[in-house]
Amino acid sequence: MSKHYPAIAFTADVQQAQSEHGSDTFYRRKAVAGGASAGPDPLTDDEQEFLRQRDSFYLATVSQTGWPYVQFRGGSKGFVHILDEHTIAWADFRGNLQYISTGNLSGDGRVAVIAVDYARRTRLKLFGHARIASAEADPELARSLADPAYDAVVERSVVVSVDAYDWNCPQHITPRFSVAELEHALAGLQGRIETLEAENAELRRRLTGAH
Image 1: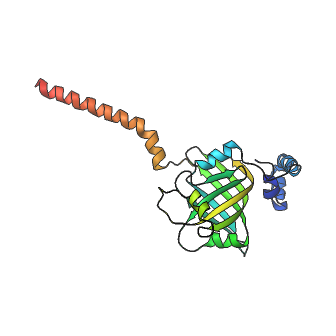
Image 2: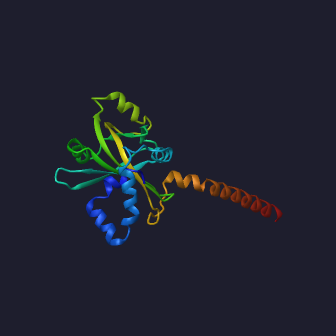
Image 3: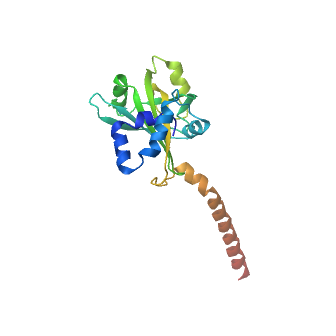
């Protein structure tokens, strides 16, 4: 947990719930320590590398009515770019034309991001403030964030100034594997199967020749 995460996440209602469940003493120390340091919290090498390796994440924005809105964002691995230790960015692709996240960000830049590595049961949460730049308004930024090998139309760039972050417990993350992860894990097994098939074919040939 970064230093300023409690200041954002631990509202009075949250602190009341922590008190009722007996975790208030532990988390109060973190909140006090965070309040004594200047922010925002920089992303360390661990957070930066974790984000670079993701091919998806979940983005939460805040609507005018106060309702949260959570949207899946995905691309090729590495579509999340680290601009510096306080800033991440990605190319936003054309979707179903509802523009709910885009519209929400035009009125309230606050965002939360949850990025998950299901295979390794690891989860990172971020709080930040986002700004949007259309591809027409800042074509150079859009080009720098786009992946030429990924077939999608870039409509805008999203740049997030990260305020705080926290790593989550892996206890309830169900392991899931992408096709690429399975191919890598099964490559050795596939090679072994091919070797055994060749050996079996050779044995059958010899047995046939012996009759």
